[in-house]
Amino acid sequence: MAVQLSDFSRQLTVETAFSVLAIAKQLKAAGKDVVELEIGDSPFPSTASAKREGIKAIEADQSHYCPSPGLPAFRDGAARFVKREFNIPAEGKNVIVAPGAKVFEQFFCEAFVNPGDGVLVFSPYFPTYIPNIQRRNARAVLCPLRQSNDFRPEVSQIENFINTDPSPKAIFLNSPQNPTGGVTTEQDLRDIADLIRGKNIAVFSDEPYCHMVWKGRHRSLLEMPGMMDQCVAAYTFSKSYSMSGWRLGFSVSSAEISDAISKMINTTLSCTPPIVQLAGLAALDQDDMERDETMQLFYQKVLLLNQGLNKIPGFKAIDPAATFYVFPNVAPVCNKLGITSHGLALYLLEGADDKFGVACLGGECFGEAGGGFLRFSCAEPNDRLQQALDFLPVAISRTDRIGKYLETHPQFKLKTPYSVE
Ligand SMILES: Cc1ncc(COP(=O)(O)O)c(C=O)c1O
Figure (cartoon, rainbow, N blue to C red):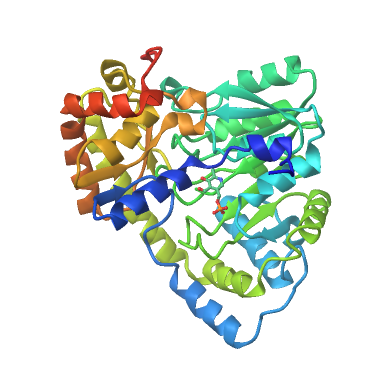
């Protein structure tokens, strides 16, 4: 190829969940029975009002450009929603609409981060944070989350970043957290707000799992005084309303920051389809009950998976606090078998059996600090979750097959044992 791709393009890393999804689909097409627990998608249909209003909007020809920040009715509706649900003092001018929550990672970095700036990211992390920091030629500064601390960020780590980084500028906060299921408590959020208030530090508060909190209610940094002026919170319809394929999310921040993000939308996406916004608005206004019933179904699945995994020798998961992920520590198993955690994940899918497989992800897909863990999402019916649970100890006991898998996949041989907490 004569033309050279950019340095950024050549080193871009992507979300591994989609790569494992592709392998799982290929194996299924070839006749293998695969329980798919790799991707964080809902197995349920989009909520009823969203579907009904989406169809109506198509029939009413709501199929043209609309304002870049969003339809005024959607912005007002989303503001009412975050006020009602999370006590966030928002108005329509504080809301910007986009196709999902993910794209706000890029817009946040474009809004605040200059080349060379330090951006604190707790690890393991949602994989697309890093490429979006790199897009701005900034530096991701990684800080580990510990299972022994229920995967909560430590305020002292933030303090240390602000005091020692040569150019500290931003923090990525994600609560409830993917992949660990950890929750930043109300007190943690209060302490973080007290620490950064009035400083030149911006926070991206990624909150896609705001309705999957299994004890108490979701808390947002935006509830804390002054935070609207230095925090962008991102919400999505993908999880709460099972609308991942519609592509709809929104951000909440001060009017000034929202105007800056609106310019990013104007110059990239132009706008978010009005059909999708109208469907989403109906979900916000009318589908609370269906949403909450679905969330309870997820909770039952998380409990089933969590309890089942904790019965497997060498697996240890924290009590489920939030999200539809279970993130057990499997370091003892990896160390015994001499296999990396993502190697173990792919072995369960490809190598452990000819006819049956379980798709999940190694924790290192979410950064080095995730090594020695597996992430399971619970996007399958309960009987399929049980089948996966029954299969895992059998798969791990097939040491001959593990040996063969490592011979053909030497990249998954564990060089240094994981530390066991
Ligand atoms: C932490 C986190 N942020 C963002 C997203 C992206 O969500 P969306 O579908 O709204 O782009 C996800 C989806 O899995 C996520 O887990």
